[in-house]
Image 1 (cartoon, rainbow, N blue to C red):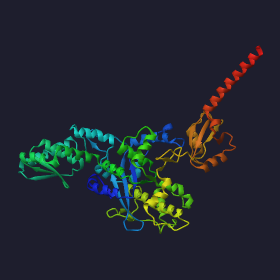
Image 2 (cartoon, rainbow, N blue to C red):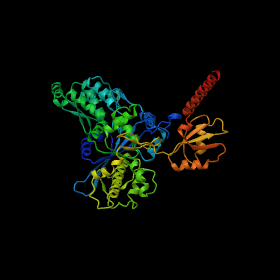
Image 3 (cartoon, rainbow, N blue to C red):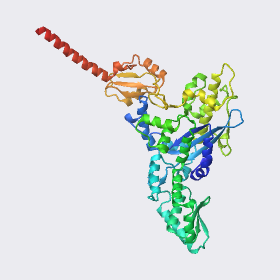
Image 4 (tube, rainbow, N blue to C red):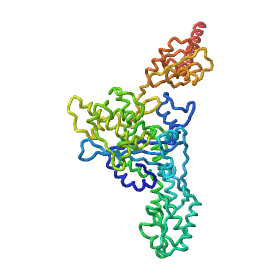
Length: 531
């Protein structure tokens, strides 16, 4: 089900109830861009420590924005054996433009082309996107609204507001007391904004927000005074309603945080960065603070990429390259628990994916995340009880077998393969670093070295000295292949990197110590010869 600003406000109470009763929530996010085109040392690399990777990626997250969030809310069906219902929703988002808020963000051509290829509705994103803001932005706009110090800056600009006032004024000249007119196509916090402006400009009207738009009614001044002092329509109440509408999806985000349900994604690191930046607070400079904040917001994270990557070879499944392929394998006869695993059905009004595959549509991918989680958890539960009868599966039992993977989020291209959000990061299990010594190739650059090896395998390259380069890959077989291939190469010597042997800093210290020791020995010998 696709939700823009109008549909979101109508469905918000139901969504809150849905999340509160859920077992877990699947998540996927689409962005206007993934990573800035940084060059040189700003590019992410297998050499990066997690903190270095975070600081580089933080810049990209600040540059791009979210255009679609997909949530698939999974709940056990009461009275049914191991059966789940999934409510899947696409939320089209657009940053709040109200008062002092006017965000800037970039589009990346490749990301736009990619989403367009899969039928992304840019019209809904740009024209009917749900507003949102983080806590820092909310504090600013709340102060301005509640103190009355706010001004119009939305998709309805001052000229449009003037047109609305002129239209209502012309109608008033011919209307009688009690007559009504409707201003269609105005919704959300803009509807509150228009009503406030009209009430301030015209003393003999009253306004109401209805499904069809803003309704204007001609009233006497006495009746106007009575309506203004009604408890349900005081200015303070109005300002709170404006703030609620302007916060938009951030209201639901806070409901999601409060519910404390397990959050499930696939390769979800970028998703978490954007959730923090767009709905919580600007990303901190401290990597450790970021980890702590995310853990406080979502105490139970499960990354299906991390889980499946760990067990895939062990189960002798064919290689896969994306979430859809993972789902297909687990749904096929290759899965020994296909017929005994959990049954997943789509909720009414959310049946789009029952027959249709919609890869890279956020809600569809969120549904796949949740489905993969249940299928993998069932596999793991069966392995635990392989020697005896398996108990009747339940989601708490699934969480128990998934415990080793909780809060372990996959990390692409960094010095460690995953981030641990509930403790220290695990040490690297990458292949060893190789050192390349170049002979008879003056002025060799990192790019030239990269091109030398790219046809054989992919390495990240980092210069060590004028004639030495470090090589790092994430595949052990590639490291072995290069060592074998270049064992007797006349100009390129490749060996294992040893810090105590190859580090320029260590070599410098050893040279200084050698010089000092030589002078000390010389001074000692000269002193003895004189005596």
